[in-house]
Image 1 (cartoon, rainbow, N blue to C red):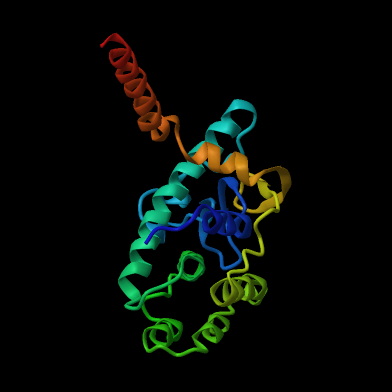
Image 2 (cartoon, rainbow, N blue to C red; image 1 turned 135 degrees about the vertical axis):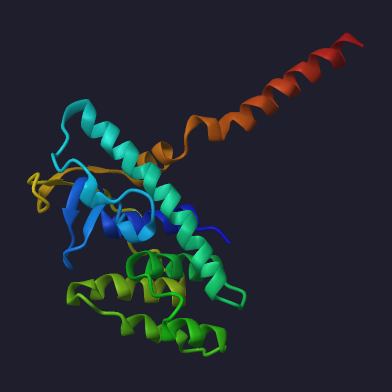
Length: 210
């Protein structure tokens, strides 16, 4: 399975976008939309810490979205590996969000409860509440898994600034879900549709010529 656009936005709205490296509430160096060295690839601690401005800010946001797209593929694979029973789309989306944040899908009691067919498995989302301020996100993930409630969808995604030294320093702007999705899906992804249109036009011309 793959995460839906609604699931993608759910994660983005929980994480926000930070276009410069910073330390999260656990002191882990992070960049963009929740990217850490644990996800593989770029290590935020090795990045230039300066907060970008102007055109550099747009470029940094696009880089963050590209890394987010790559990270999602990894977490989708982890959930697909861990869960051995069929899932509904909203259940899968909730689990990708959970693992994206905790990295715990392969060891969580939540996973074993789902695989065993436990109807109350959703309750185990609340077994992961560190740091304490994560409770709201766990509650949203639990409700998404249980009821298909995409609670965060419809809100704007905050873009945060840093002080250039690894600490957050207030919100600089925000982005709609529609804008985020359009920037995450490059023009090349739409190319097959354009090719299909061209091919259909050519076929129509040949058809008229007969």
